Image (tube, rainbow, N blue to C red):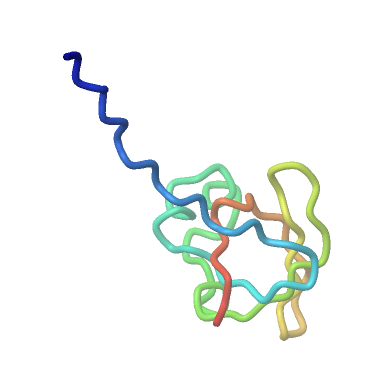
Length: 84
């Protein structure tokens, strides 16, 4: 009798972020990214603390509005975590 191949357990895909979601930046995913290189050498703490509101999602990028008097920012969706 042939043994059925055991498939490795698949990792659960995180829930997709949608317009209106409250987010913060994942420090590990952001560091050394193209977005980090194109920005100030020391990113502000508020982007890692959150929350920011996801205004628009276009492809791999999302526009985030922070609850501060600063411009909206475009970041890759994989660099964002949902705030709880």
